[in-house]
Length: 639
Image: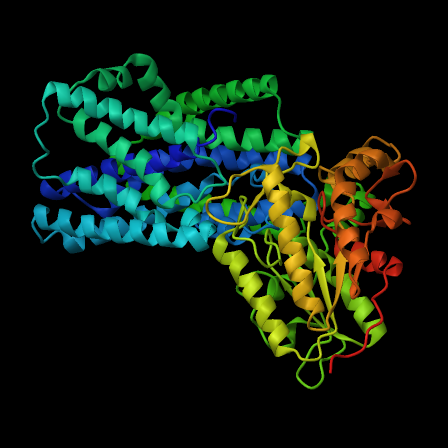
């Protein structure tokens, strides 16, 4: 949302508050001899499960109506993970370039509840084991653990941002910060003036984080520290003083908002996600306003008719409540399992949509085993395509990002036809080019992209018979431009050094220099370079458009982009690539536009074959079909 790009720090604020409240609750019960695990989980189940069940059931009903079978399968899997309070691990595994748009996943927000649930599972036991120590010593241990977790997060976010975001060890410091505050034996004495200043600073740190942060930055790590410290300041001062900020946060309206905040958090994300999924475009301000109002209405109703009655359940019913909570989450998990195993509850889907959806979601069979930074240095035969390699060397290799991965099935058929052995070395969101310093994007990290380039160099050194290097990317996006205004995609910027400015013009300069350097690297070693151009980017997921057309009895060829619009988006980059190929011997360029577009438009279906996996990646069957219009250059083995 414009102006609130860092709104995701609300979760960090929540973690600090939760650590403070839960630890305070455990400590008070322990000190008075009233703590028991049954009581603790009784309270947590009453607080969390009833509203969450409502959201699960409502989300499932809406998903059945709106979602394509393949997306429904993923929804079912996320339902299982969420009910088991491990959805942070589930979404972490999906958080690569092919994970799909996060804003379309209705249960994505449950990752934070999973971390909270894991905290509930581990922390009471840990607290009791350490409780024989004095509070002062216990606070010191927590402080050290907090610092270690923060350091791990700060280090990990630089090379594995998804792990630092989703996994509990890298988020534990936020909960432990709150726990440390709760166990302070003697909070510092703060005068009235310092209290006013401290709370203003704390609030400013949170607001600044909301306004200044965005998803392209290395978050959480140290960037989460201001919001968390700001929250800690508000808690610390508010526990002893009543400065202006504390009084404002205690007004009736703010307190009322706080009471429904849990239900609001549960409802707002699925409502927004389903709306984005249905409209298949960024939401307009008026739509966003209506949907947020609907979320607030659902939250108020849930608080009034679900949360409050649940909280009034008497303590004498502990076994029943705990049992009912576990049983209900088990039922939800079983429902998700049934959705997954039945391939998405497709009983209400047109058979033609089911058929096309299976084709659309087909992928390179080697992607999971052979793409990504963890797989770039593999040297076994699992990632071989074409014919088996001989004399320990491959003849052809395809390097690039996830678009190169999508081209790999085409390279497989072409390599078999030519009697060549091949290997893919690809990392989503990264350029297989030499000379650039860093890509600024939500998908790339310096470590991931460095791994790709190092793997490419090592591969060339270790394969003396390599004849052809295929380079394939979504070239255009690395120069700071959005191909279409309706994609609502954060621009990528290519930097030559850490001092470079982030601009379209400079990114293009760095790109051109890196491309020239890479081509020269291969050519001077006698390796032919094949530059693969981009397939026509359709801007949105065409499968949804095709499904809507079928439901409306419309011509399924209607979901197309004007050819002039596609050429306007790609011709500049295609001209640059073809110019490099024309100026050098040993370099060739192929553009799929002629095979995939007619004179007026470009669409997802070519010669009755559905080509796309999403808005820009080819599916496996589409890539194999496109290979019919492609030819590998005729080259001799290197001496």
